[in-house]
Image (cartoon, rainbow, N blue to C red; front, top):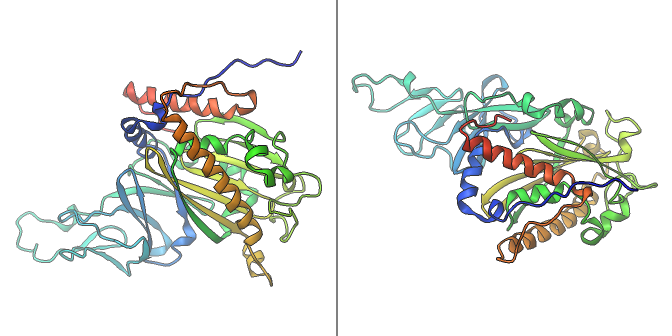
Length: 375
């Protein structure tokens, strides 16, 4: 007799459609956890910056002196004006408020405050920029809204940094970026990414390259969900024809080159590690039923420099696959808003989904008990 599995039900609709719950969970995840915020290569030079918007906050991520990366709240210490308006650019050697010209160096120190010299008790050292924590993992940027997080990024990754070291993500470079605006709750995107039972009907092109039952999931951790899927015989990578146009990444052995690894690094990074490239999705919640998704395709610099390099085989394949996923997620968001919705049973092939649901419930419970989870 085949193994039997206990029934697990999906969560009630409020976890995806209730604005009050959504506002609370943003703090539980993006207010306490390390979250993905892009790539260090986006700010290669001193003074280069990008803005990141999350949980109603605007953060300046800037390359400082001696190559250090800093993250500051985009708020002048004088009267609260936003310091930077453009989504990216260069601050030059200082960060200057456009309102009253308070000026900060790249280490966040106030170095210029016009007409404050006669104010009794005023000391510039008392008014540095408010800082957020920043760290990197193999070229990937992570932020934490506290300047003293409850745990390190390495602790939250729980071994992901070691597992994916062979891909050398810090050496890779982004060849393409596509930004999607999806009318679905961010957790539904994670759910969709964490199972492939939908693949035969939703992704026929993907099914031809990698069988939907070839997945091998790792037990879920507080910091990640994921596993790997095998490529079919004769298939070298995920593109419409599955043909090899680039060499396998240098750090991978022959076995790793026969799989694609799919991991959700919570709360907001989806990693798809292929034999010859890496694809990332960064999820930015923009409302209870809306998520901005930044998708990037990363290749080794040698592949990019090779004559005739073209990322379109990977980009076009995944752009179609992404849009198929976003469509079904949007349809699910609509269905969850119906009075007819009731939690339904998961298949035993959807084991990462109830595992993610348990993490959601545990984080809710820990915050309601006044003991926020740190990972």
